[in-house]
Length: 269
Image 1 (tube, rainbow, N blue to C red):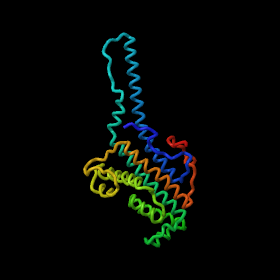
Image 2: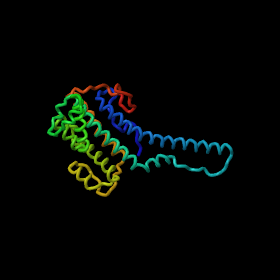
Image 3: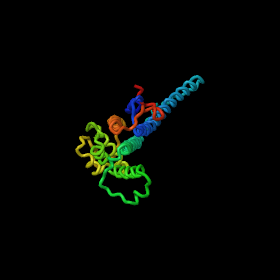
Image 4: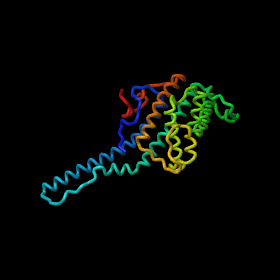
């Protein structure tokens, strides 16, 4: 389960993005950093353990102590870390799926503030809801919040339909990135609602995706490299989506690292 900084895709630090996408990157970086920190701590602990053992052997030899040399496992803590691969993979998948969906609804809010007409709907709004809000901007925020709540409950399918029909720009440019996002989000739902055990709902929602799906009753526990591969299909899709929406709806963009703190894993190119 060896992982390092270079495995996860991060856009160039010189690239421009919206504030919502910067917030996504901040959360995404936090998910990656937490896992890498634990992995590096396990590796460091093993290295120090081996050095300490070698020093003690040399000391005993210098002191003339006799006895067979002990052997230790040089990868003890890394192996202990690997034993928790289910919890690690669940943490990455659930964390990434959450921030992925959060970004999609956040950028829709940004578009709605720039062009309130996208909120045109046949839904009813009470007179009381209008009267308790003193300005047009407050009414727009109320409608945005209501729309976002309904989209959030609809999951990726509902958000994607709204993006295609109302915003006029597809979230995904290819089927591969769409399938990767669908799989990660459905895995997150199974972890949250069924302890990670695959059920018929999971299989039904991913039918026609072209993905190799696990058997019903099995517990989701992907290898870390599989998860990284799926994430690395999703992030570039969001980069392009953010660029397209910012251009169409005239949403402010700045260089990624000028929005806030620089991320160490962002490519300097």
